[in-house]
Length: 253
Image 1 (spheres, rainbow, N blue to C red):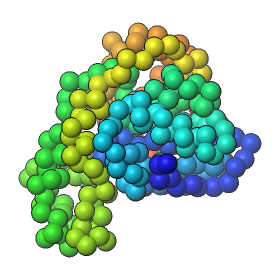
Image 2: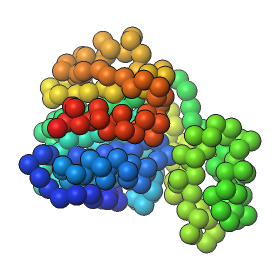
Image 3: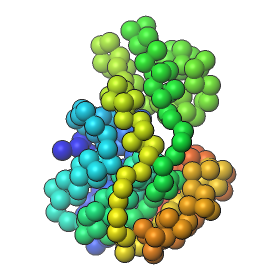
Image 4: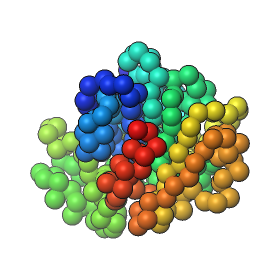
């Protein structure tokens, strides 16, 4: 079972399950989860090979969808599901294969397509960091700066560095994530269509969800709606958290 955190109490509204992306964890979503918990129960999950969840030899979307199904079934009923990036793909596969577990779906800045880019260079940077010589997050930030020059990306990665461990360690199974990168950036062979309400919420400055993806999206999610957050890129929930939260409330409440 995935490691989860629960916020708030059950209400008349469905429980909201939030699924993070590659190199993330549920803790990345703590602020949004706490705010959304004013009207419903919210659960954040650490995906396999991330955070406090179990380590495994695979990172396929079928496996990730099954992991999420186990969380939902363990809580006793269908949920609204929000997934970002890799988590959005896992949530889409969950909805397409086990539609009865998903009330409504929000897919944050990802499309059901294979991408040609790789994130292995970030794994290179994390593996190259001599964590034994890191005492503070500032030390790690300075050491990573040359390999990861973007401040926001570096700050995001460092949320997965466990400085309380002796020695410090990444809360990520980096060898498996490297080996499975083609599957993570790809898209599985999934058939059928999810008939529930679906929101594809994107950053206006991101190129992950493009106009040419809409036909594929509508084939799989015929009731899809589309919205963009101005001034936000791929990490739209971190860059524009209030706007992201507002969009969730309009769609889900």
